[in-house]
Picture (cartoon, rainbow, N blue to C red):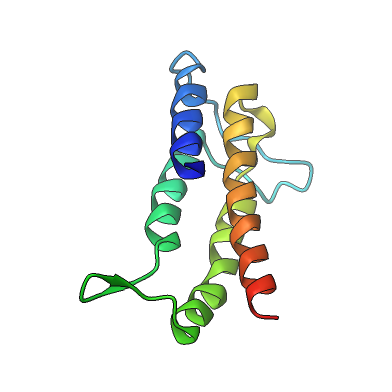
Length: 115
């Protein structure tokens, strides 16, 4: 249910920007940029990554599969951190925070499940 809510929220908030795509702007450090479109691409990649691999129709939640996912998670977090939503409309900034929350949730799940 959480996934359905997130996709609906991303769609609604993304459409609420009036179709405007903000120009990428440097942050205070000048190291981050990106557009809401870049975030949407990342989100599509994220959703595909977040799903466990399937073998013979069965999702694989094995230790090996979850360890691999946990090792690959920081690459997605770095992609998100490379985007600077500061100059985006508020609705699009919320999208960025929703994706960040999803990533933090998976990180939490792995850390808690590993103990």
